[in-house]
Image: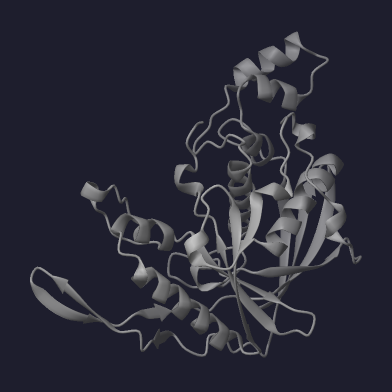
Length: 324
């Protein structure tokens, strides 16, 4: 096992709230949960089995180790049907092969975000329920998150670091999120240094063969589109709207307004709630709330330091966690 020190800075606020809805620290459990979630998302799109809950019979694992001394632990886990994700991140009876030893963070003293807690839009519309008409005024609450630089010390093996952890961090930097409130665009990060050095993460690609998974993830599961109507459930997609703004607050408001407009335009209740999220439960339409949004504001910074906003679609995870 070796230690890897990764330095990050936030593009958008990082939120790992507590039971009182306050973000006072960067929680290791939130970081590990995000790493696992995004790894499982693209496993799902690559056709690699994902399970919601999993348990290893450790007694059977030890018996097989004794019977097959020439096989490593991942070969035996494969034979016992433990999924790729659990081989790396653990499950009941099996410890994660990636650990967080320490997190240090440095708050930006000039951080003024959010400059609002609730924002209202001119996108008002009428809704009739039980014969009564009411006016709907969309509004959003923006909690204070962490904004600044932070450093995580991971502990893992050299093989997992180069073939899984670093490619995973590369993916999250480009497409993923850390922590919660992703529906607001929170959780976008940039990797500064690894072990004190600037490193081009593009040199690291997944090799799941080291954990005895016989299928690797390729760029074929990604697609860029220019219209919400072209959403494909079989791919991870970037919806190109190319909002540009130097002000993060204005950019996020613009993205959320765009998303709200498209949500309102979908007449099918199940499709609307599934794609864009809902807390509603409707047994007659097979809607089980709360249901997280599958269309997420994806905010980056260009070479000039200006914020650029698009959307990420992971619409196809409707069977996420099922055995296939």
